[in-house]
View 1 (cartoon, rainbow, N blue to C red):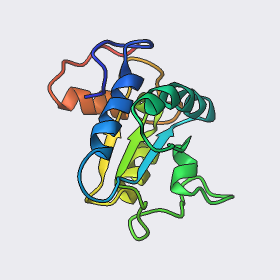
View 2: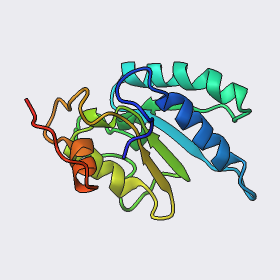
View 3: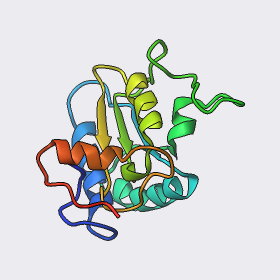
Length: 154
């Protein structure tokens, strides 16, 4: 399920992300390569602004934030083909996606294909907030499959 004890904005999801990343970075061995992404530029900018102070207070390395499309290496002129895919995986050990409720089914499938099998994919968001503009309610479906009763969608 998504991170954060509460639902919606201001419920501690960003602080939880930063603390989780601090724990991962404190593990022995090579430091984790971390990618932060969100489905839109505006959401990516909010994520970056929100995580930066928490990351600094926890002594995390600088974290780059991008859109999911940019993370995957969107190819001009194509909505479904990306530089990173099942044959050319993302180089990250941890991929955090905020506002996952906005990620379409197609884009989530491309992301999952591109994440290395040994990497961690952390999906953050509220399944009842900010629906995808394209087909699919991926986060809501994941949460429902995990045993949480589905709410009626309006």
